[in-house]
Amino acid sequence: MNVATEPSPRRNRARRVALTVVAVVAVDQITKSIAVARLDRGDSVEVIGSLLTFDLTTNSGGSFSLFQGSTPILAVLAIGATGYLIHLLRTTDDRLTVAGLTLLLCGALGNLSDRFFRSPGFLRGEVVDFIRLPNWPTFNVADMAVTFGSIALIASVLFGGRAASRATAESAAGDATNPGEPDDDRAVEPGPPTSPPTSPPTADERSTSDESAPPR
Image 1: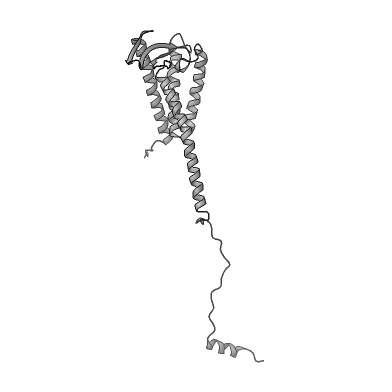
Image 2: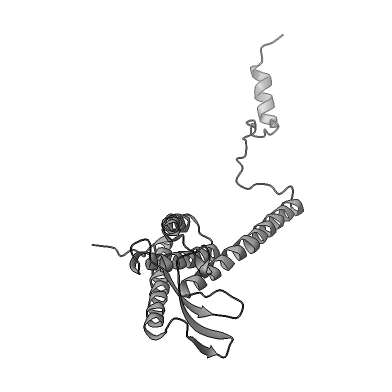
């Protein structure tokens, strides 16, 4: 008879990470395709006045239009970063760290897909950016994932370190409060054997002893 076993927590986490990556990369690529199909270069479409506009541009550099003209180098670096992020995700258990690494992986794969499949060619494809805020470089959904992932990692370092320090302090305080509590699990060493208590002889026993004693 086959006994159904529940999936391990690590397997459940891997499934959640995979679903998140697929969802975010899909949204990134769909919004980029819509922007390419609906927007013209040079045109600015106001979404929320001048606060949020859609402005189609292509980027041969990194996130937020940085490092222009370095597409092949950035593509190779992105491949290496993707592998390293997957390795980190397999070795950490902190939830906030996992969330941050997952979002970074989403952003890396979203923009790496453009390097692979968009013109002018493989590993030379230009990333599509179309979201613009005042006094901020044009970006896309993948860039947003990178930003939020970085924030989550910084928060995990700050708050995770504080939580560990607090737990250490509480443990030390508990040891100081109860310094000499006995350990119930310690083995008790056996003492020397004791003889059973003896009662004084009765009158009959004394008379019998006197009769059996040899004469002097």
